[in-house]
Image 1 (tube, rainbow, N blue to C red):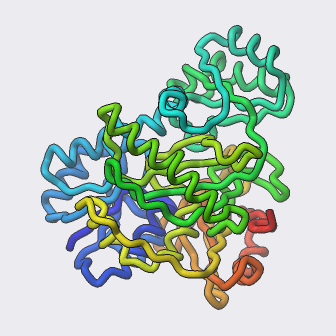
Image 2 (image 1 turned 90 degrees about the vertical axis):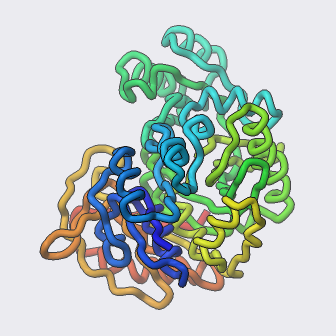
Image 3 (image 1 turned 180 degrees about the vertical axis):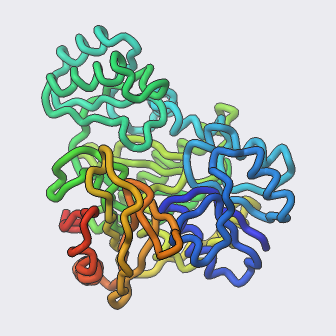
Length: 415
């Protein structure tokens, strides 16, 4: 088969690494791909949002299956277009992708279908939002309603911080259209985890749970990022918690979307908080999470191509998982999630033992690979337990310690 993966980040590199193991793939393409992806797939110079060109490419190259990685093209209706052209695509329609595209839609949906989540209120007027915050106090969470590249969430520890976030979003338009509406939520207390599932309408096939670390610096300090590291599975998330979350969150969501006339096919990602009252949804994504994918897919024993095809055909893919732990640490550009320099040369990273490297913001140039984004790459390892995995990863990362321009957290997997 000819397979196309759309996107250029670490998530897409992980998907491609797993697909490359399949004996049933003749040609593997990535659009646009990155410096690491170029090593085992043909990179095509078409951006992930250039839907017309992607459709043309898929037709011209007789692509049998397209997998969409990032959220923006989903909301632009890439799956709708591919389906209209009779092309097989593993991705939700733009109607279904609204679960990620609008936090207010997701909250109303959860309320309607009794899916456990934090209490909330939605605002477009800054003064109304501020009086609600003053009334409820802190800690409190402020979210831009639309897509903000993982940066539209402020967990405010003080009322002042929360009021500043309101001004930033509604008055200063820091997130443009994405922040024209904001959602103000109660702050959930507990341990976060993510549970992703392969979904086709009412059929839900959960993966192993993962935990990612959002804060930029050690001990969960610093600003929220798109994720600085992750591990899977998560010891404190028991089979009972997974069963409850599958039933009360993932299955209810899949069934509710069918009911709403927005049937969901693709990857449903629930970001959750394990509270004293059980798991509650923090957010939904409508695609593989990043960096969770980089630690979940290495544990999958199945042929990923076959899984995609089975799910699309309404068959149970019979998922099987390694009885191991995968842990990954993100190497980011200094300054991330604020402004940072691109084009910094990356040294060769010697693999220690079971280590693997997944590229995110990288670019191939004449004399090697340079940085091309905030999160540059992830170094991961698959071992029998968390300590071993962390040891392998941090041993491998030592080769970057003398390189200027990058930083990484030293405590991934410790909490």
